Image (cartoon, rainbow, N blue to C red; front, side, top):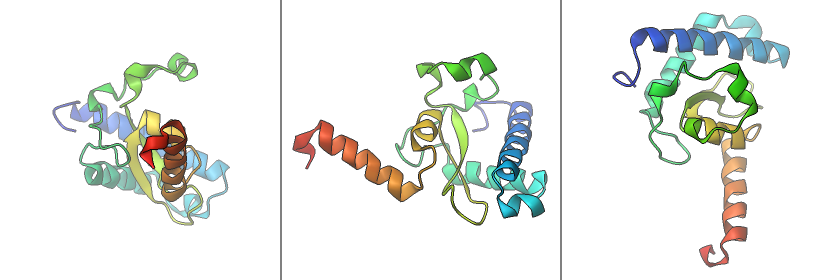
Length: 136
């Protein structure tokens, strides 16, 4: 990740993501959000970044750390292919009772949405099997 973005850009991204995710967890009534400060979220996100090794855990693609900090609000309403490999923070399992985060591409995060990893992979298999009968 270092070398693809500056330390300052990474720190700003980390702070913003931690704050946004904690606020979202509070709004969703996640009990851990009540007791975990933003600094805890920052550490969990950073740990997930390190664990990722810069690779999307679902596709094996190298994430584009040079894209962090370049996403603008107006782009949220578009499906911009240039951002498919933008690193994003995702709850590993959105229904978990503990804070468990992973780093994945924007495209995977968008597709995975509220699914846990097993359900997401099963869904992907269903799509692949339907679209390519020779895949079976």
